[in-house]
Length: 479
RNA sequence: GGGGCUAUAGUGUAGCUUGGUAUCACUCAUGGUUUGGGACCAUGGAACUCCAGUUCAAAUCUGGAUAGCCCCA
Image (cartoon, rainbow, N blue to C red; front, side, top):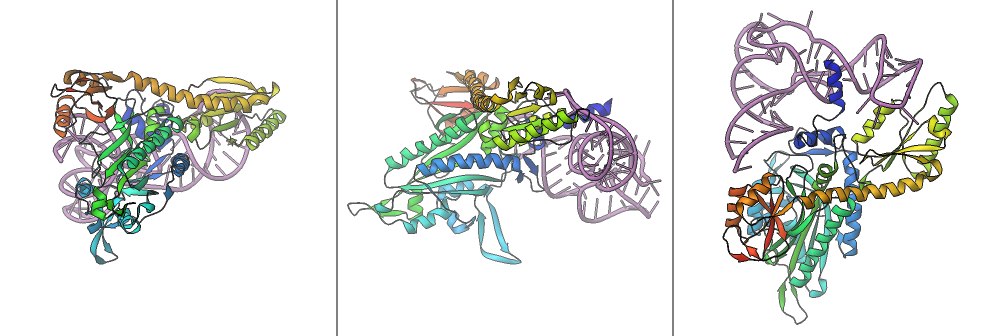
């Protein structure tokens, strides 16, 4: 009896998503074969199941970046200390979590090398050499790479690790206006990646002064909400101003022969997005993948019987045909149907097609959607059409569900005590405030909430000082 | 940043109090029977996180390291 109980626990998930989100999350990323831990804390293996999701995101983002005139390049992962420390605010922000290379073999290096926590400094050294004239601008480069940030907080697969994958775009513009325009254009590409590809609704706005990127003039961000009521920063797009240009001597002669500093942006989107998608869509049976990023959108599970040799033979050949024709995945492993169903559910494959002799007699198949578990008997002639409509519908419906939850979780508040209540209910508060590190600290102390990103302006009283203001911000518990 | 819990095969575990051949199940491999929601039989493979100490003897006791998890800030 006990053993039976255990074997069930091993195969299913250890916790319900609604009971214990953290335990559920830690378990689902392992059981869906997305992640493997290594012996270095915070450094994880992205198994094929998760890397394929990353590749789908790369395809979308990369093609959108190119539409905006961005080219890909690659800069080294090691940054000399003297270079990393050139921009004062930037070093200060990153210093505590930089990992260093100090030796080559047994020999100590004359200057230690940082493993990039981000690539501003190494890229801008080159930018300074390349840019001479306004005709060289805008310069728009992106790189797909890894970065290392030696965090001491508890690592979580995808959401926080010491090494992660991302893209970082770094552009230089002749004017502030041109740079700022791009910041929002990029933020919109990111929004579409979340909403259209990952089916995750997000809040877009600007970060508070305290939460700004180290060395940036303005940081814009997307924020998502987990089912447990905690918000997550989904990605950022910064206007850096001319601070880095001054530190790295990125200057150009304008049309009138005047020397000017370049206006710079940097923007990044990381594998954290995968974790956000998992947390938002997954359920008690495992992962639920939006069709657009599912490595396998449709799996066909044939069911055969040794007593019915002819029927079974038919089943196999029809299943094979379906997969050959539509590029679906055939799972004809010698395992009971239930076990195969459960595995594909754990992995979040959007649509499963069940096919046995009984179906073939009627020229039908059973089509099951992962998000709702709804089963439909569909004629063989119409299955391709049915599935393509279904995939669209799943994609849309996942977004709609998540959007409902997000919308229902946003509450306007006009005092710190209201904000505290809202946050304790696992919701996000929108409050008027005067943006300052002191006010932010006060809000955090009283309510436990961090500022997330700015909301649309509206007249009201600052929740800390009572001053009349129109700037508003989202606040919530956060990862 | 502060506090707590845990570590035994691929996974989940028993054993630890009282030191002496490491338990069970799933998984895996092979063969056979099976297959409409986590099949079964037979045979086989696979583990004490690491480093030190105590001891005739350490999974077990002691110290340290590492990793995972939880709570608070």
